Each structure stands twice: as structure tokens, then as C-alpha cells.
Length: 117
Image (tube, one colour):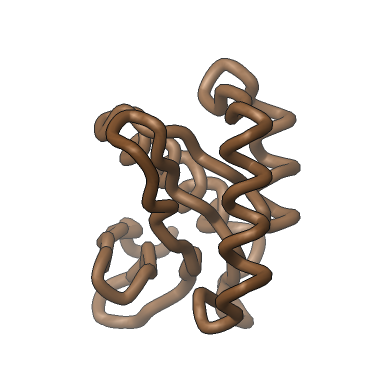
């Protein structure tokens, strides 16, 4: 049995990172969709689990935590990352569908600023 996974949000860098001890074992790259109050979103762009750490549930833990952060902040999640999108489809009770206009705004912001991921 491995060590417990600790998940830390680095909002300034747009990274939700998973650590096992001192080793980073996974990350979600994301950005905050800026819009009018109450209509923003956290946008998951890419989920990565480091080689040798696959199959431990780390990616699922990251996405679950990501949705929890968004819920606590009262904003939607836009899962542009294929893994986050498939996780959301499997867990509709934990991953509410974002409004279509928020998804469109997130895609537009990503298209116009490739540095976001």
C-alpha cells in the first residue's frame, strides 16, 4: 500500500497537484474563466498522472477534488480535458453539467490564449 495522496491547489499557476510524500504524482492543468460574478467556471484542460503511478485512482481523486473546489466556490466546472469529461459522465451526481454558454466561453478563451495550458 502506497502513501496517502495529498492534493494541493496552486490557483496562481492553474494547477491542482497530487503528491505522494514529496513526489508529484499527478496534476490537472486548469484556468479560471473570468466572467460576471456567479457565472464563472473552473476549466479543466489536461489531466496527467506520472508514469508508474497509473491505476491508483489519482486522476479520479484529482477530478473529484476539482469538482469539490468549484462547488465550494459556487462556480461550474467545464471539463475540456477528455479524462475529466469521461469522469463527469460517470459521476453525474458529483459533476453537474455546466451551462452551454459557459462551455462556449471556456472554449473561446482557450482558443484565444493557448498559454492557458
